[in-house]
Image (cartoon, rainbow, N blue to C red; front, side, top):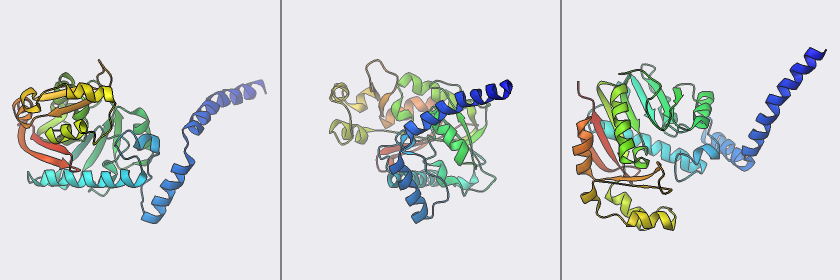
Amino acid sequence: MNGMGSGIRAKLKRIVPETRSFLARFNLADALDRYRHRRNGGIALPIPPKNLRTLVGPDPRVEGFLAQGRRTTEDIRKALAAVNRPLESFRSVLDFGCGCGRQMRWLADLPRSCRLHGSDIAAAAIRWNRRHLHFAEFETNSFYPPLPCPDAKFDLIYAISVFTHLGEKDQRLWLAELHRVALPGAIVIITTQGQYGMEGFRKGLLPGSAEFLARLNGHGDLSNEGVIFEPYEPEGAYGLAFHDPEYIRREWGRTFRILTLIPNGVDGWQDVVVMEKAD
């Protein structure tokens, strides 16, 4: 009897903190909103909760999350069409910085010959993906390389709004890592922010603290600096990065062959860089 009581107590010690954590995060209004959208829209896949949606975009509303994910996925298809490589032609795809599947959920109908993989720094998002998006495989990665996968694994890699938040040194590290995990001839798509995006922040079209905007406005012309990075917090490693197209051709062209640059090619805001790993 004592053994049974000890077992029950051990389970309670594990379950009670988990229950408290769940209740602290639970948002009834958001849960009802997600249920309503799934029922009215005939949406098959579950919709992630607000605390995860907030991590991947400026519009955490259910309708905003779904609409932006669909638009961005279509923009990826357009970028691939520009180099005559339809999405269905790939066999192993990595969504680097996948978050809670904002783009990935719109790829669920790809043929089974196309294996889908997602990687992100947010462990909570990866856990949610593993529970709900069973058509793909997901792994957590650290802020710095390496990725938890072997060399030459993927023939398509895309990173939406990832390099827009990294400093120049960290960008170089991740470019080298994406080169490592890409197959020869693989296509790599990375979005960046150019002059258009930088002016948007400087004019206050997107939110930012006065102190952050003052540091951003302290920089000169993007075409002269090539790349501009300002951390959200002084001396931080995460912030906003802006790239001049000539800088990308010159510097990123040392790692990949640049196929095309599409201004404002994702959601009418971020630029799209389409590259290839040389054989």
